[in-house]
Amino acid sequence: MSEAAVMHAVVEPQESPLTPESWGKLGMWLFLAGDAMSFGCLIVGYGILRHASSSWPVPKDVLGINLTAFMTFLLIVSSVWMVLALAAIQENNKPKFNKFLGLVILGGLMFLGCQAYEWTHLLTHRLPEAGISFSNNLFATTFFILTGFHGMHVTGGVIYNSCVLAAVNRGRYEAKHVEIAGLYWHFVDLVWILIFTFVYLI
Amino acid sequence: MTSTAHSTSAYIKVFYVLLVLTIVEVAIVYLGLPRMLFVALLVIFAVWKASLVAMHFMHLKFEKRTLAVVALTPFVLCVFLILMLMPDIFPH
Image 1 (tube, one colour):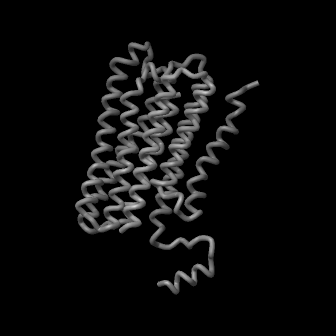
Image 2 (spheres, chains in turn purple, blue):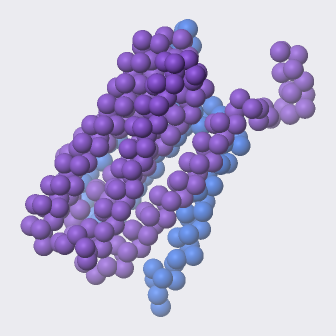
Image 3 (cartoon, chains in turn blue, green):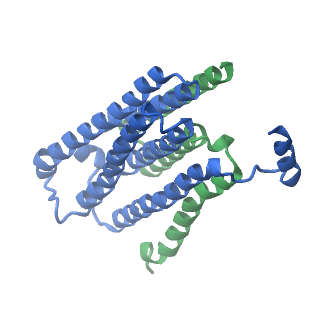
């Protein structure tokens, strides 16, 4: 094993080569790069539409940012739980792993609950009160597309993490699979940080 | 064992930094700064937070360079996208 490592070091001193063990991680990164492009296009499109509009409401006044700040906090905390879950499975501590990945899934579900409440409240109270209609207003359209696209990613992440939790407990998945699921979950957190700033704060 | 414990505490430290940055961001919104300064500050904070997540939680800091190249590609493409759309944003 160490001899092989030495051989690789001679052939390629800068960087270890891709091995079948790292294909999954590379695959997830490639998917995330494509996904980042989807979010990037939506955010750039949002910026251009906002720039070109003669009037744009102050997001803070229409949307409110206290609940959303809490949602940001939820995702950041669940990212840390994901890190702790990975550390637990790397130490082969399954009870600890189950606890933390369970918390990650719970955090995702709470985020979705907050978002469902927020959307309902916006559609029934805040938007009508601000005189904004859902169907023919760029502010509302870009808001629902961006947060909705992200919410779908959170939903996917909750399902994905639940599958990983089940697969690890049946002995089919190991630490490396958890790490790949973690990459996806942290990416969802990263995108929310950007959306929180660009859509809610600015 | 000790190395895992050490890295876990490092992650907790990153978490606190993210938390403080988020609180500062929300505080900036309530401060009522001039528009340009306000936008510039928030963009800096957002990119700072996003890169913290990518570097530490997604381990980009400790990964192969191939993955860093993959991760940087969408940002390069987004800058390109903005440049290509410049004539639409600022028509003359």
